[in-house]
Image 1: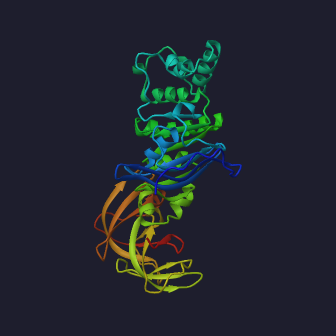
Image 2 (image 1 turned 180 degrees about the vertical axis):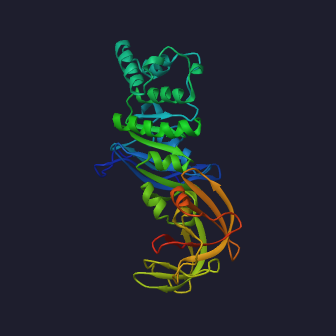
Length: 376
C-alpha cells in the first residue's frame, strides 16, 4: 500500500506553486507518523507547519530536507522531483532548533563552513559570508565564538549560515524556541523582514500558534500526522473547521447545542449551558435536532451588569476570577449551568466603567456574527 513509486522527472503545476507535497506517507515500524499529506507552498512564501509534539510536522520537515526517507508519495521543488535526492543534492538548507553552531569556530568560520565544503573560491567565500552577516546585522561579531553571543545573536548567525548557500528553500525548525518571550517577539518581525529581503521560500515548524500567526502568510494545522486545516492565519483563526483547530489556535469557549432553526440566513441553537438560545447570522445546512458545537472567542464576549434586552445570545453567571493582562483583563465567569467561560475585556472599557469584580453577578452577550458552528 505504501510502496514508493519510481521518480518522475518533473510535474506541471501553477506558476506560483514552488513546493508540492503529494500523498506523502512516513511509517516507522508500525507507527504512521505522516498520513497522506498533500500541500503546496508558493514561491517566496513564509509557510508554517503548526502542531503539538508528535503531530508529524518535524517529520514532514525532515523529509523535505532529505534527512528522512519518504515511505510513499512525492515531493517536488521548483518543477523538480526531489523525493529520492540525498540532502547534499537538494537546494535546501535547514536551520535547526539548537542552531548547531560549531563551538570551536568563530562566527565567520561557522558561516563559511558550508561554502568551504563545496570548494567555493576563497574570495567568493569572503564576499558571501560578510554579505550574509551584514544582512543579519552581525558583521561586527565575525571574530566572536558562539559562547560569546546571546541567544538572539546565535540565531542570527545560524540564519546567516543557512542563507549564505543561497538555497531555493529554507527550512526552520522551531526557530524561536531558545529565546525568551520579549526577544522572541522582536525577532519574529526581524526574521520575516530578512526573508522577504532575500526572497527565499521558507517553511517553518512550530508548536507556538502566536509565532506561526505572526510570521507566516499561510499555515497548516497538523495532528496525528495529518493536515486538518490550511489557510491564512486570519481565516484559520476566524473560521476553524473543527473543535481541535478552534481550541489549538488561540483561546475559545466551546458549547454544545441542538439545532432548532436552520434557514439560509440564520441558525438557532438551544444549549443547556446557556441562559438563552444562540442565534448565528448564517445557515449551516444541517438537519434539525442535530447536535453541534459552538465556538466563541473570549474577545467576542461583552461583560455587563444589566440583562441584555434581546431574545438570543446571552448568559448569566458570577465572576470567579479576574487577571489583569495589561491591554485587557481576563474574566473567568461561572455560568448558571456550571460551565466556566473566559472573557477578555479591553482595558479602555474597564477604565471607562465600573468594572465587575470577583463574586459579582454579570451577564455575558455576543453579536450574531461572533459564534462559529462546528460539526466535528
